[in-house]
Image (cartoon, rainbow, N blue to C red):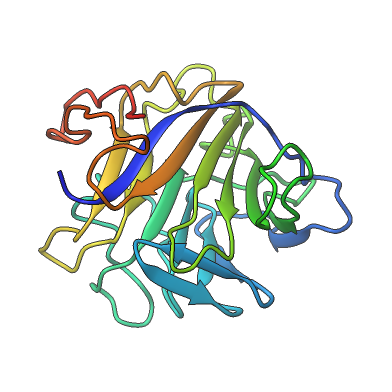
Length: 253
């Protein structure tokens, strides 16, 4: 099995950024918006690439974080993460690495106009592991449609300053849609794919289907292993058999 990220259930530890005066407003409201978050001297390492600066982390209302200067995806249809996303701007059609805690098409809450928020949080605080700082990106009370008043809140916690090692990721799910849950979303990681191609590397937890690790009060830890075995060395079945219509494995380590 190739080197990849593996995922498993994690302790639920929601870090509330709404109402935090020290947090950064990324997107207030609306639909199909994305803005960058400034890493402010920190770095994030993902699939062996080190990202830094003010434009390398692009946060989208569509429930994903894309990586790389100038790259963003903000379309209205989620995908399987094997053949997409691949729509950065500039350079339409090139690979776009992405972190997808709950990729779908969302509308912002208006009011209170604080749909997408970010903050760098010190390790060892707020229940986070000690040592490294973490970037927390929160989707706060977003909606599937303006007429659908079921509010959805989730976040990704990204471990910073780990180079040359890849950073851990934790997906936290505070409140999902009461009927749809994750069944209309994509959850996973990808290097992205060029037009007509496939991603160099990816791991899909679920694509438009139920996922026991994505529910209210649940969390999912993603950790990279260079050996092709889950952290700790235990062999497990291939985590991605066939994404289209297949039930994903239960996790990995």
